[in-house]
Image 1 (cartoon, chains in turn yellow, purple):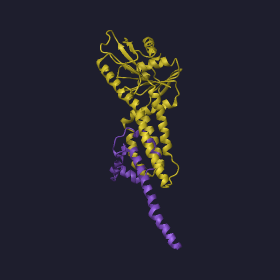
Image 2: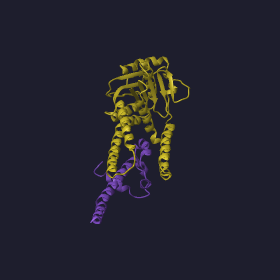
Image 3: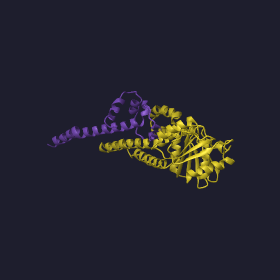
Image 4: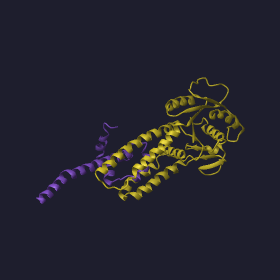
Length: 281
Length: 89
């Protein structure tokens, strides 16, 4: 699966670019357009009123706007159920408050989204995945999480292996080892996610405005070496060309400022698509 | 003579084998607790961004009430566990 991550400062037109890019890609294969922004706007872009998180909007184009709060609650809820089944009531009562807190903790939102993204990568149901991301910090998280998580898994595997060996030597009978295989499976999964994300094309959207420039400069510095920048899309260009511009990029694409906001199916879309084609070749 | 042999056998088992197994068991328990500590730093009030991914592993761990009590600061053995980090991380 080929992944395109679309990032940029709020309001520069990430959804517009991600949307047109997905339409373009859907001519070449099956596309999933995933929104990792808490305030989803894909449906607005495609002018869709239909309810649902995962909607097929064209023969080979799906949009996915996950309900993050619900996803987090479900994820922790499943674990809660298993803990209740596997442990004594005393232990369950001790663990329960932590799980409950985590199920409502907004700090976990990006992690849930990364989980959703990882699952899509593993499932590989589509030829392309375009990710309409939220803030810069989120992309940084997505880009660095696999490596950091893998390091954690290695650490845990090391300690668990040590424990299993000690346990055998001490002839402790605790039955079949379930934990280590799960850890190894998780590690394997994360290695695949890491590999796929390392090959992802990162498209940074900005507009000719001071703040967007500054954020671009900072973001690209932070993301350097962690993610492959394949294009800078300068959106809403009108008249004067921006004077300060020395970002290293394989391709710079300029999208003019339109009188009306370009949505899916609008005549302006043709012009945007023509420009975005440069990214794909 | 047989009685002495039996006694000696028992003595040696008690003096060496049992203590060996006991210390192995202790070491195994400590290793296991170290792993649990790593897994559930959040439970001890230490922020760990990975704990979200580690919750999934929770149902498959062997957790005992005493350990949990220590993690929740109901007993003070956490510093002892953390001292094992030294020279290692």
